[in-house]
Image (cartoon, rainbow, N blue to C red; front, side):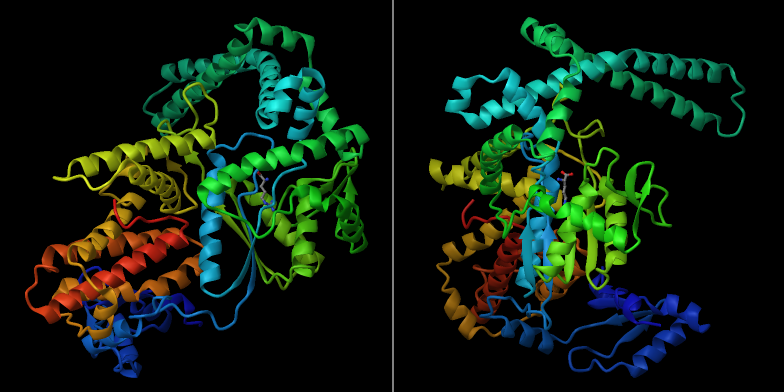
Length: 631
Ligand code: ARG
């Protein structure tokens, strides 16, 4: 059996009395080998050759192997990274070409909170890959060819305010998009309200029946709970439906527009179809709109400090799509089914549709063309798609189809992630039910951060920060806070957006780590410390367990980054940085630094401070989060 799966079972110990690392693979191995776990552990130890860096390993409890690192080895390892900008992280031996497909919003719709996760997670993975020495290329696969353009084109042809467009095209296009979607939402809400009410009646009736039924039956409580939550769900669906109707009904201007443009959704769809079939007028409009759409996007990326190596949107692949379908047919992979061209896979009930009945190509076709381009032109070894979990089936079918099509030596990963929820556990929206614009979200983060920064500085005997620095720090804390909140959750789970948790000075937040970093820099400033000299002359002392703990923490940086890429999980890095900040805080409580009178010891501790601050800054930077020396 491969040792791979057991390697992950060697982990840092929770408690230093069990050594620094603990391995618990003897238990599962014993089952496979049919021996007692303690015997397996002893056998392993007997064959182990770790004396260079480790005290003789010990077997403990049911069969744990405890490993304690030698102080000499720790000191030597720390000395080696003294002046190393890479903090002990070596570049990979064989660099691979990674394409990181992330962010990829559908442009022309206003950016909202849902766009954040892909952008932030993808960017962090990209930065780590690059730092590890891989040839990583970030590609923003923007949705610039979708149905939203039909909506804007329809709006442009019917509702344009020429003067506004000339003055502020971006705003005017956003207004047109909103207007058309409001009108079409209204019309579909009017249509579906009677059905929703009927469903509510049904659900209510089910509850009434259930309440009359025998409550001692098995599963009764569960059924009751389900019936009640069904009613709740129906009700909230109706509330939001009614809200969409009210919005228009209460506005005479909008109401007139809605009445004058019945079936607006269908008309917008026809505009999209015209665009896709090469209609000159619509194509010209599309070309006119695109730069404005990209401009708004760019504002968001600038603020988030994110850029891409390339942004080949969906439109780029349009000329290649018919060939893709031809090739799939030739290879016997795609066939006609009910008028559409489909690729069937045994693993999935629904096929991968590459051409619809009306002849239109799909999201799937575009993604296949993109694979072809990335492998043949960009020479990709590995493609990461940082996209919402809800697209799981699409990517499963994409990868299977691509492999069958001949792209079987490429590694594909759907780096999936969950949804950002509001306190009510529903997708995060404003009170009135609209999605939250990304711009205003970032503004709010910064203004809340500003309050924290002010309070913290005002609490000092002598405040240290002038207005401009407070503003700059608030930007760092606010944007960093948002990014970290997103990164520190296991990406596969949904998470609840919470401002207070996000910006808390004491929890698992960017703010806490940024403050730890600033705190260390404060030590250097107060002590007028010459770091270059300290690095040169330091004699390390690791007698205190808190010093040892911090030293080991610092030396784990490299293995953590490897793990981040192995699992494609940036939260392993946030966990590590949080752990490092905690180790520092314990160290700083237990070990005086500037007040330490023994100069050698003082310098040794200052050196540990130096390494910690470098790790915190560097680690945060790999997550796309800035730091400030003073806070
Ligand atoms: N634009 C798509 C969306 O917003 C995401 C695209 C992800 N990348 C891809 N190659 N499919 O849903």
